[in-house]
Image 1 (cartoon, helix red, strand yellow):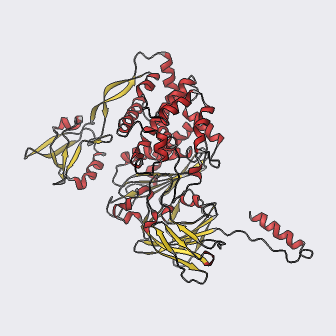
Image 2 (tube, one colour):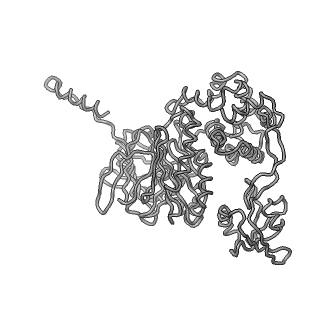
Image 3 (tube, helix red, strand yellow):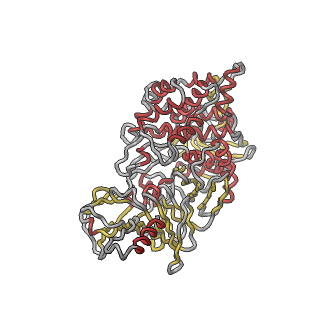
Length: 623
């Protein structure tokens, strides 16, 4: 762009003697958003957003209500205060606050900029109802977790304009992001300002940045650079300690994806919370972005447990480079942050992504076939807690409505199972030659990250790219009300349902806890309405027992989370002592730690599966 402008200017000078009074075109100024991470006041930072001159009489400034990937109304504007609209002389202009997230400014032609203070969500009670991975942290001179939708707003009808993001920060804190810093300037009092030039507002909120003391590493996977940045307040974990697990996982993912290549840089930003629920991150997981993910986990986790959780969580987020980065509808591409129109294809955006996060692990030998089957069965069990007759496209389209919003968790359950069933059906119709990954590659070639599709066109295109019978699959199980007959699909791959012993947690079996709370005394009680696992029964625990201590440490519902985290580091064969109350009598139970197992129904490979079934199974899991 600059070269073109300079060329036009030079040409006009050459002909100046012949073309008097020719007006020179001026380049359009980007919107400039400035975040001040130096002058922090009461855990609040100042944000300024400076647009180009307005030609309209009035405008509205918005802070997002909803952002992609969360599918909930979180009202990030509620974390802002002290809003001001200033004219070019620095005088305050009148405005009307319409709701938590929007401000109407009548004299737009006089408006120079707006400014406001932002609180971090981690400090709010219950984090303001925002999941930690989508939240914000302001810890002066130590850590700033900038999910930018919580800081930077936009003006009406100006989301597609260029943005320049300027972040002033202490010199000893460095930025971690998939964004490239275009320029860094040095200021007074040991400060620096990082400048990022972005094409549109979506790029602002799609690229989180974490500022902290340097704890980063990077590695190359084929032609993609992966940045790993870790904030561990007590230095229990580091980027170097997490690197081997992340590198192994992403290398396996890239092998699984083959020639799909949607980004040349990917950032994993890891925030580890040392005091969950006490003015700090209290819920855990990750939020995807097109070329990065924000992960929030408890710092107290042991390395092995953290590695395992990171593999499951980050692998899901990384697969979002397929969809919605490479394949998405207009609703996603032109997302309306304050009046969002939702797509009907959450089965693909989240469901297929979650399915791939499990399928790649068995495909690349990271888990066994049986472990993969067990994971799918757990999803079947969890999905049946929701209404299995609700059309998935209807639920997806209306996910923000009261009637459907509580069903969102099901996109990771039945959504993944839709992906699995579609995968098996495609393998069946193609004689094992085509699966859902092949379909996603075809869709990626047709669309790509810069070409959204019309929501209603996707299923017909999928049918066109595959087989006519796939229309019936969608009409019946995705757009229709018929529950998926899992037995039939598993039988195609030579699997049969059978009762087996599966490994479970010490205190939780999947989504089902073995413990509950006495709401009056806040004591931990073992449930008496389910069968306990082998570890608990071997130790002598019975349903109805009240837990008092484990290895001398007292536990109540207030620190039960610590118990669960501690149990993840228990070693097979180590001594263990539990003190319990049973029928008013205190008892001490002593024994050895053993791998907890429980009876469950799962699918296992038939001993008498025929050649077609075995061939389809091999194509499904290893093809």
